[in-house]
Length: 266
Image (cartoon, rainbow, N blue to C red):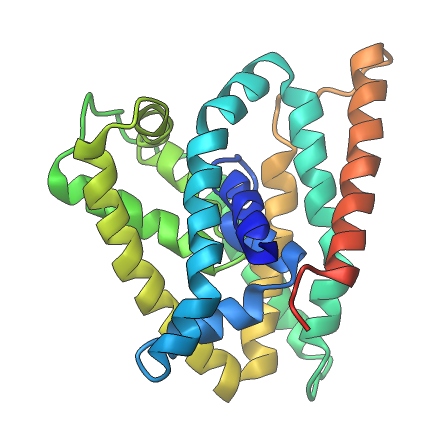
């Protein structure tokens, strides 16, 4: 039940601009175990399936539940929503930083973090925009699934930003809201292939090059912060700003407490 509920929260991250499913996995305390379980799935299928099934069922339900809600809330209360999401990220930073410094950390890894941060910023704020298609072909839907899977596995990769740049975000949200199986089925297929591939790669890198890998991931993770605070966050002395900062503090405290306690089974 804990993994199922955590999966629902991860599904929320998957449809929220500035967040990702992998960020919510970090907050829930399931990131390392999930990457290992997927990356070694065929070596221990029964054990890994038992761990992953409730988590992924929760993620699918979370995406379906929150896909339309996030779109509406962002439209009506964008500043409050974005600062709440920012709080979720900030509260997780101490846990993530401790993970980076866990094994053989040296000062030169700060340079790796900075480079990863700058690359993440370049991707997030790239001005490259493609026209939004009216519908998606089978292959475009699979590519969309691959992009979503990358954000599920790699903290700091924001699927909503990448999908928006490719003109696919609105179609993604609409296909969830209307349960458009023509788009969703190949997207799920692409996401499944992507999750297996990316997890195997990340799991291998973590085992062979732990500190280097986590330094890169942490730098990408930090690049999420400015992507959440976009031009819609205008600081003015009014009630909306006050409420937004209250939710920022609440989001930070909640994610900090969850990341310290974690939902992870003992």
